[in-house]
Image (cartoon, rainbow, N blue to C red; front, side, top):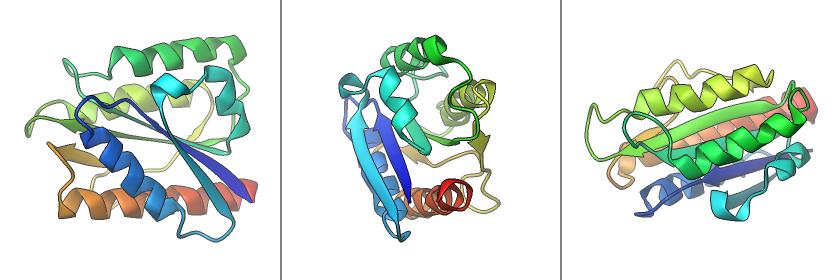
Length: 159
């Protein structure tokens, strides 16, 4: 059984809607439990409870929101203890070319430094799901598919 966390920062609810769609996809995998939490209600130490961690943020100046960065910075206290866990990221922005991919890659860089396993997607949004504004049908499908793919990987590695 794999336990997954979808943690996000959202001011406009666009990133929150993405988190909910990712969780819906992950819940399609038998034996997976999923918690969806805003970063404001998540302590860094809690990440150790999960076999899969998916973090999401709106894009601010080409990177993640400070609140999510603070959570990641706080994980230095247990550096190396997330080794082998499944990680993923997602982002929203106001427009095309708004920095979604750089935001996702910043999050994934931190996960790779922790030794986490990151899965690319060969169709759809390759690094992780993105939305321009609120979630449309394309973004919702990509979010659900991403959640399912990461849950399947977490089950294979930790189930």
